[in-house]
Length: 328
Image 1 (cartoon, rainbow, N blue to C red):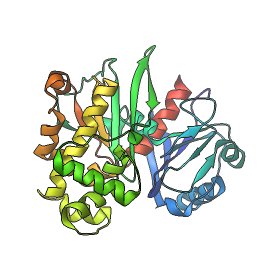
Image 2 (cartoon, rainbow, N blue to C red):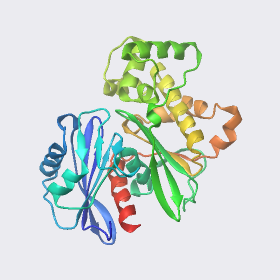
Image 3 (tube, rainbow, N blue to C red):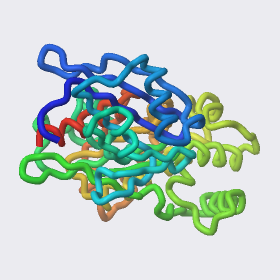
Image 4 (tube, rainbow, N blue to C red):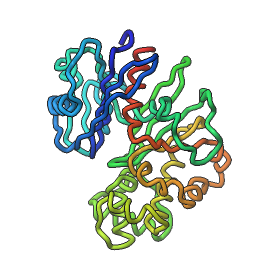
């Protein structure tokens, strides 16, 4: 992809919402000029997606456009990062990059996992505005140590940023689908409850930390059936049994991802749950669990931990991912 585009159309497609954005180049900087959101549930194919983007953004193709599409699911194709097709893990949408290029009359369309975008968001203005949670201050110039991102929302995603030949590259993962480690009588009881309720033999990190996992945890602890949003409003805004246990679970996933990725350059936490309910990261239970591995405590304490507070970080990351290819 040679040369910079005239404008960049981006999408951050999650299991609940699809966010669209338009970036334009003004005064030697890229600016997020327009944003729109629609439910992901009404989208099933590339044509549905493009129709929704055109209608919501009131926009038509222009010569020199580039499209950067981040979807919460695996991509298929010849490359690890940028695929020819992709499907939404927690939804029915299937995207075909060739069909999108054909309809938009452009050869500049990149399709990638949403946490490739979240990783690149750490390098963007959204990442620069992240809130420090724990650990040392992030090095101003970043250094070349591995960085990582992890976030829970409708699902759970994770990715790393590695530097090669002076350029950052995002590497996706399927960490969310690895088995979650439960400890102690109460947690094992919840594991049994969760597996029985979901008809699964083994609970994954996504089963535990996604929105539905939060709702199931609250139901297990209180007997109250609520939507994830309702649990957030009533149980994650104060010191509650649900908050304490969910914060421990979130920290444990972060600890495992830090140790797996060796992200000595920092861990950025993203995703709708932490952004809407920061107490699940600010709770004392989070840091107690994060540093609860005595053998590796020194390493864990050396890693900067930040919270991406910008709900549009996925749009910024998608644009930065495309620009890294255009400028590379």
